[in-house]
Length: 490
Image (cartoon, rainbow, N blue to C red; front, side, top):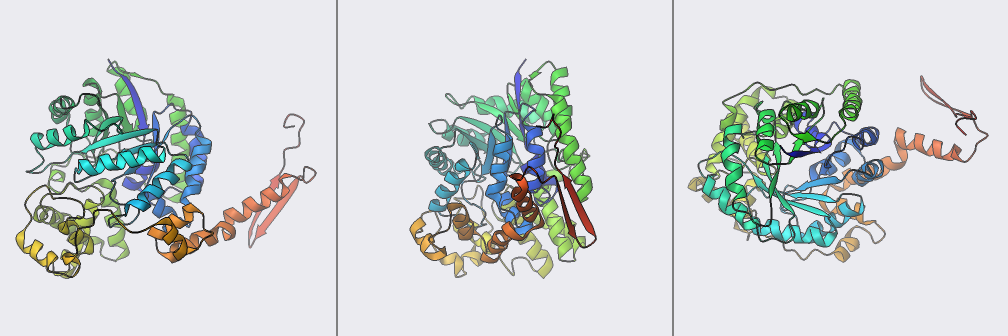
């Protein structure tokens, strides 16, 4: 039997899959991080660039402060970050100098594990990103194979792709990422041995599989049986549904099958209880086990993208279009040559499908991201592209530009000249990749938000031991704080 390590994905992928990426706040991270640190996880997936952007855009929170909060409260647990290696926050190709800065800042703020998953399986690009990550100081770099179903994603295709990673000295191991939850135990039983046979120095030893079809709890058990010793999971209420297998049940099932899992279930329950309480307060949904849906294997849209699409259609006042957009996504993907349906391509496909449905004419309006994809910014597409779509896209002004390969004349000196010489690196990067008004609002909230005001008040009385009671009143709300002055406290 196998000694199994667990990766917790609640705060990143669970949040994106079930809460539209917007549910988790810095305060929530501060509250749950000490509890997660007691579990014994191999690592905690703390963020992606999407989560960093959401912290600024939706919560006016400093994402770097959130990372530091997790780092300071989880000293015994490695923090991980997911990247495609092609984009950072933006939905277009991010220049290498910005990636280099981002990697250095992630390490500086406590992130030491990096997953690199190029959805187009540009393994040369992935290896270049791995080398960049090493220079930035990441302690562990994991390369990825992204699983999907399509006429072009065959065993031979995957065998060639994983073999390309085998000679990379900057990659520690390889993981199998199943973003749409398409893997079955039967498919995994043939795929894993085949992929493993193409590696010599590296091992395929990690599984990331969503519960969208309801099968991933069984697939995870099959993975352990086949020697995969690191499995991704989530804590209720951020488990199940479009997210990942529920951690507590997964542990019990693994142990019942004879595998060894060195985690503290009581600590899991405490962390889960905290998150459940927060979900109830914020009226956020709890994931529930999904019923098997055979049709899902047609559109393969990941759970996080589905929840975001539903939210955005609701904001547009057109929630009834959700089924039509999913159906159109199938046709768009085929027209594009079967790109894998994972970030950012899942969003590209869904956005274009939404345009097609809303305008009533296919490709009357082609998104910039689709043009970039067809132009070759993300490498060659895996299958043949619809010629009419290709002609339309490349016939535009944007389509006539040369492909963006990540090279750029952007420099930090140039960015400082543009945004201000006194900015710290963290704010500088955010201003380089986000709208100015969003970053301005985040900066203003540092001193004007209720939380920052309360923290400032508490710090002001911290060094005044004779002050035992503080009262704060705003409108009809009053908060009384009393210092513990007992001998035991002293």
